Image 1 (cartoon, helix red, strand yellow):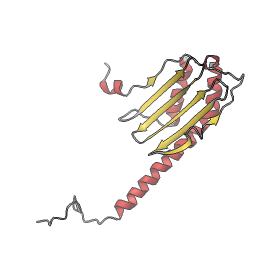
Image 2 (cartoon, one colour; image 1 turned 135 degrees about the horizontal axis):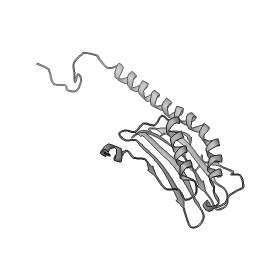
Image 3 (cartoon, helix red, strand yellow; image 1 turned 60 degrees about the vertical axis):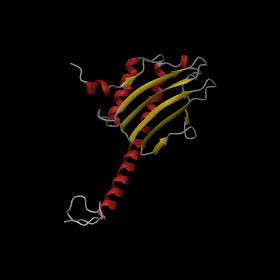
Image 4 (cartoon, one colour; image 1 turned 45 degrees about the vertical axis):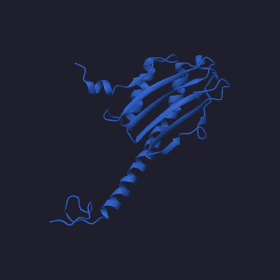
Length: 176
């Protein structure tokens, strides 16, 4: 029997028009293991492709660990052959990796495919073998931002008076 929570937390995987679906599923599984992805509240994992009639397009894998933490990896295809990729993780708008159009890196594929119809499974595997190394580094950066915020909160709230009373300081009214 399918449970409602399983439907709500289901991965959103576009059917691929460029690659083998089994390869997409394997890469998704690898990413989940690398980032220690766990299904739960405010978590999401998805694969999407963009294929335009001009030949431009791209693909990407995106994950959200929670409302405030996640990552993304993918390629944007240009019909000029100047393909660019992004690979980043984030926590609270603190990005680690190439996250903006200015920081996207060029990616030269073997055989120099130009438009999305030219891409094969071999191109996807070529990209994956080079890009997966950055995922762990980016996730460490996002986790460092999370740890820094946790330390800041601990310092802030640890400096407050400890009276042992629940709600201390919430009201200026005298207690009876």
